[in-house]
Amino acid sequence: MPMSQPELFTFNKKNGIESSRNANNIIKIMTISKLKNIVSKLSKETKEQEWFEFKLNNKLDNQTIGEYISALSNSACLQNKDFGYLIWGINDKTHRIEGTIVKLKNKKVGNQELEFWLNLNLNPKIDFSIHEFEYELDKKICLIKIPAAVNQPTKFKGKDFIRIDSSKTELKNYPDKARRIWNSTTDWSAEIIDNATINDLDENAIEIAHQKFKEKNSDKIFFSDIDSWDTKTFLDKAKITEDGQITRTALILFGKSESNHKIHSDLLISWIYMDEKRIKRYFEIFYPPFFLVIDKVLRKIRNEKLLILPENSLIPLSVNKYEEWIIRELLNNCIAHQDYTQESRVIITETIDNLTFFNAGNFFQGTIESYILHDYTPPKYRNRFLVNAMVSLEMIETIGSGIKKIFQLQQERYLPLPDYYMSDNVEVILTGKVLNNDYSRQLIKDKNLDLSAVFILDKIQKGIPVNDADYQQIILGYLQINKRAKRDDINNLLINILNPSLTEKQKYSKIKNVLSKLSKEKIIENISTSRKDAIWVLK
Image 1 (cartoon, helix red, strand yellow):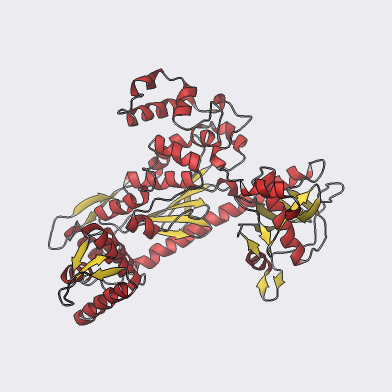
Image 2 (tube, one colour; image 1 turned 90 degrees about the vertical axis):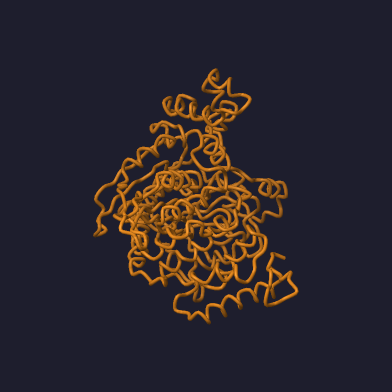
């Protein structure tokens, strides 16, 4: 049955965009507040240090600004700081906050924005940001927030710089410092919090986690010893602490809310409910221990039944708007993969028909297609220590498989697949309604439909353009599972999901062209001696 292009998708997409704007407004307010705190704190230092620089009204040329970004990024790395700062508006002699007339936000280099031009000339690309705000009445601040270098020095126009005391110089003159930067791979979530103790952790959360850990490891040789472990032993065994020392992971998962300040990041989860007019009706903030937060968020979400009417049937099928496991996995993914150095919060926005999950930081490894179509397992994670701890407590699925399972469960429930929007942050929109009856009925009719085919059907129902690369993915996925395919197998695989505007003849021609392209690129080959009765395999 041909699928129509649903108008509802426009509404769904709009909801996602507006949720994003709402989240961004909240983040902007929090960001300015945090930047004011940073300015206040740094101004109280007795002298400038290598990872921050004060200026008053010095209008630096563009080249010098770029060199400072390189120097402060590299120095922040060496000083074990998450960020370096270049700040206009503070007297570098007295450290008084006096304000500045310097403005960089709208400054151009030729026809390019200064920020864009600086980023073009930085290697590797670091997510620095320029901020202009009023610290107090008539005291404006211009600030560049600069991430510390990781794994390699930050260069500007091919040269790397460093700060020695209060002077900027080339890093090549200090090979020992350069070596330390090259070996600076760190895991933020594994860092030890020196002023934190086991008293900063929630006893109830630890007790529940201890039992959860026992249930998961019932087949392990150490199972009989688990009950005898004291708190310190359990936390070490569950990869939450290091030799009894409190890690950032421990405070994220088990920290008391009053100990939040010790981690120097915004450990908050916000839940927002918006009505059909996009008016924010309800709002709640959840604090650590995050191990116990998920159930609290779940209780907020409206999860009534949906009725789906199969083709040629008078008896509707009943499913929940949302699968509880999916909500848990998406929210725990936000916690696990959040870029905590951005000092942002996880945000869940609920509307009548969807849930939007927001976390700061780009998608660290791979693409959505690689996870759901090719069983991709990422070689590294942003917060490796935190991820491993959450896996050991069964908060998230076995590493690499959670995303694919989310898509599979939506397919089994005959509902739209999640929408991922990825840039500097990650947003996932989970739709809790039928967008197109034809899509849902097709999934009911063919319960064994390959996920790659469902991926295409979902695009069609949402009005998203489908290209030859999508059809190629379906063929390759089929061959990975079945090892070989006759032309009839591939015809049957694609014929019902090709663009419904094509005639039957055009559809068969399209399939022929897709196969021909894969063959010419030597991705697949015909192992039959006949073209007419071709048998295709992966080459």
